[in-house]
Every structure is written in C-alpha cells, then in structure tokens.
Image (cartoon, rainbow, N blue to C red; front, side, top):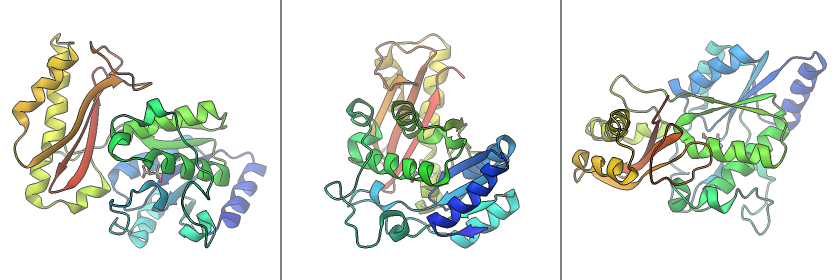
Length: 285
Ligand code: PAF
C-alpha cells in the first residue's frame, strides 16, 4: 500500500500495535536495488509488518550535491516492494515531512546533531551537515512509524554507527539491525549512484573493492601497521580515480588506529567520472 501522509502511517501502525504485531522500518531514498531488497527481506524475516520509507531527504544534501538529479523511481520501487510483500511504502512529500513553507535550515528547524567526533571524519568531512540531515530525518521516521526494528546497510558504515549512537544517546526505543553489503559479481558495491556511471566508469569503480580486499588480505597475512596497509592502495590507483579518503578505524566508534585489529574497518571514498562512491570492509568478519 502506498501512503503519502504521516497520519495515515500512524493509523496503520497503531492498528498493528493493538494486535501486538512487531513493526520493521527500512528507511530508503528510493531507487531501490538488490541492496535495499536484502534489507527488506531481513525485515520481513524479523517482523510481522514492514514499512519502507521512500523519501529523498533534502536536508542531507549539500548545496553542490546531487539532490535534484538523484534518481526518483517510485513506480518501480512500488513494484519491487509489492513483490517482497512490504505492507506500506511511505513516500511523503518534502512539505509533508517538513511543513509547507518552512525554511530548511538549522536556524528555523530543529535538527539532530550527532557528536563532532563522529561527523568530523570520513564522509562527514566533505559532506558538512550531511549527518545532521540524516539523523534528523531518521529520528522523524522513527517517531512517525515507531518501529520495533530498523534496517540499515553496512555500505553506509559511518551512517549506521552514527544512527546507533543517536538511538543510544537519545534512548530511542528501536533496535538497529545492520545488514551486509550487497555486491555485483564484479565486486562493485551496489549503490543508487552507480546509475550515474558509464560502463567504463563501472570498471574503474572496481578499484574501491580491490583496494579494500587487498588491505584485508594483507591484514590476514599479519600486516597491522595502518600506514603500511593504507600505502598498499597506491598500486591500484590511476588518473581516473580521485581519492577522497582511505581510513582504517574502529568499527564501533570510528576511533583512528595506528595498529589495525580484529575490530577494525577499512573505509574508502573516491570519485570516478565525478561520481562519489564509498565502500568498506571489516578486517575480520
Ligand atoms: O541511506 C539512506 O538512503 C539515507 O541516508 C536514509 C537513511 C534513508 C535517510 O534519508
């Protein structure tokens, strides 16, 4: 069922809660692919009822980012959700989420601001304000849907860590379930932004997973020095790759490491054909 308003979702969820049914939320910005479907499948396995939100959230995009051109494919998304047995697709307008006429800035709107230490690193360094926008919309979705469980992909590792931190710090009664990255057979991590890449670009984009896999295999062979592990990336890069960051940090709290250990995660962001791509790998599964 497609629903556009907060009141209608609340009504449906309230009726489920009266029957003691558990509710799962899969927050998305639409343009659904197999990665999202894996979250939906996990939600279906875990919960009695599943809501997928489909909303391109304006307040998590910077002024020079791709908000206007971000793929919007609600009809296709609906079909995929129907096939998976999703109970509600919640696709609000920006006016429904943020009140018509309201200026979307933090001098007029209440924002959730995650801790500086968690945002002033990795993606947050170049995407200033991004995680404020993400946490604000995710907390709003939690308040609207009141899910027992919410499902996020490890692909956006920093996002999940920050959302878990928000849920913990603000005592939000929801259990966050993180699901593994889904990859093409080539190794490329699925992303709605892969749609921007040409066929050649997709080949060049394999560098992300190659670098990460190589770091993991060096770690498996006993290399723990973070600088040495990061150094191994340079053999894979050429002028088609515009590196933004490659870091090895703690997978729970994003703390920098000098020596990698079994709780480390390697994360990378780089541009291919001016498309910003991210990927990551746990050094120990
Ligand atoms: O990961 C995403 O697609 C978005 O950041 C999210 C969590 C749906 C919030 O808009």
